[in-house]
Amino acid sequence: DFEIGGLRDQDKPASTPARATPGTIGKWRDSSYGILSIVQQNGSYYLAFASGGRRLPLRATSSPKGRKFIRPGSASGDYFIINAQGDLESWDSQGLIDIAPRL
Image 1 (tube, rainbow, N blue to C red):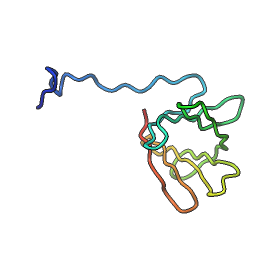
Image 2 (tube, helix red, strand yellow):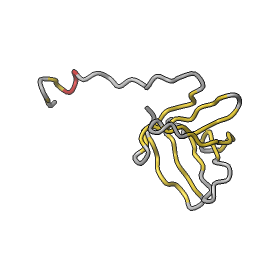
Image 3 (spheres, helix red, strand yellow):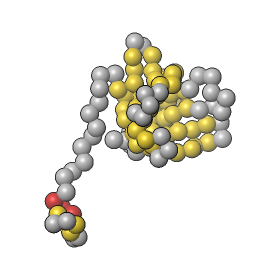
């Protein structure tokens, strides 16, 4: 056991998942881009960046590794997989780039 600022380790609140807005497939904390989410709106999917409000179109498909979202027109073959743990894997034609933990 350890104590910081009068709170013991067992006193800290359990983490709770971030609240999802309607149409949100999931939210993740990316080491490079901050908070990312995949949203579905009017039958289309987007990768949304919390900072700046930028959205990139995605095409949903399936994969043996999990739910897959391809970035159409990406020169480097970018795609994302929501794995069995709910984390977001970023891939391109050369392989795995990063894994963003689920919020």
